[in-house]
Image 1: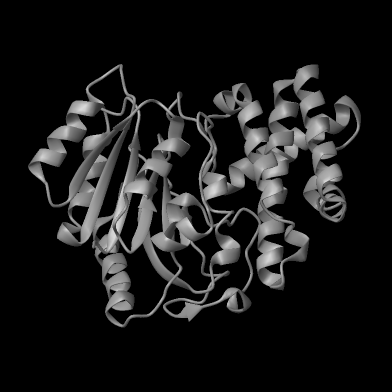
Image 2: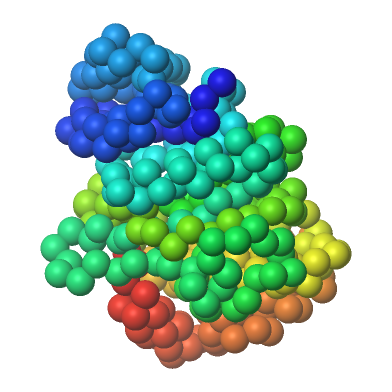
Length: 339
């Protein structure tokens, strides 16, 4: 059994997957690197995966599958994982090696002491193309450092401060117990990955190191705004799946409930802003239908989100209201450094 399984979803990733894998190899024999070739056809991704599996047979495994999208590549990684812990690293991202050593040392300590840790959280860095200042997402205001905590010990999550796929390592068995299976051929499923397991998480540990380097700014990236507008149906689909996960108004722990409401609020906001930014009647109708869907599924939650600050901000009436919504979004975008 390995200490940590790392799944790398790869789809036509030949141009950058080497850098990703090389940084992960520094973890040595305790780590299992699952290179998931998700039906790549345009380049030699499959051959590169096989080459690493041959060169590092005790560490790298190549998994080949028909194209199923990012979520199905994560599913394949989870199905094949033998590590106590599980992490996803996208093929155009990489990790900081010094922080990586501290992560492994921390996880090793829990395993040796036979202590159950459900989720380890660390910082990530926005490696934005062309940006001089690299924004670091840390959790110092939200989580006590270097100690085992539960949801009741959580401090304050600020607006824009969320636990994302880049910052989280889960206990593998927990992901299986919560029945996590991401939808095929759908972008933005990483939101489900960091949302659905949360009520199962009883113990957390925050390590204040800048571990994950999140590359952002490529024109064809799924988080590019124009790409996101083109895929608004998938953004909405993921948001609806998250609404369907739980009745979060009935979660016992107040802080967990509040955090999950905040996360769903930002998902509703992003879907709404993308619809507004598209400037098409069709997408504005989809926005209306999404809020209607929430209203029908969970009326108390709808009231909380619709009449909260962000919900009101993206539902201002008329063309003028939509302009104000977009202006607020642009200011937020500049402040937080995303997209």
